[in-house]
Image 1 (cartoon, rainbow, N blue to C red):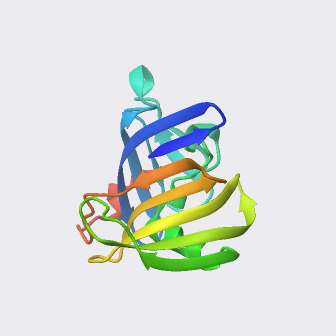
Image 2: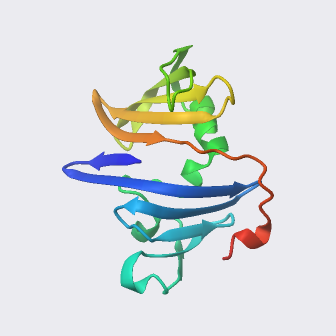
Length: 169
């Protein structure tokens, strides 16, 4: 994930696990915060740890605590595929669809949302859905013509048998 905010930039790679209805876990595998991770089991708190020497210290913090969000303030549940798709469905604006580019070598459909009321400086969001799996493959958000977030998802494995115990809170 690539994000910018003003002159700040954050580049990260995440491993991400999800189990319906609201269990999510993430680990930062490269970039800013490498070695950190968090677990969310619904509600307004996350359990997590920073990377580095103090990675053994686990804290429960508010979902929107600066230690638990990305550079632009996105939370762990913001990245869940059902929530990503729901934002396109429920956000006021102009929605359009057309054939998209290849993402990770796969053909996509491009869904563009021009926001009626820009939020967090975002004026336009573009979601690329895999034609073969119908799952999100990439999302790019813009502030005017400037890319402020660029997320690409890959190595997706559905129904891997995750249990509630895989999400220690």
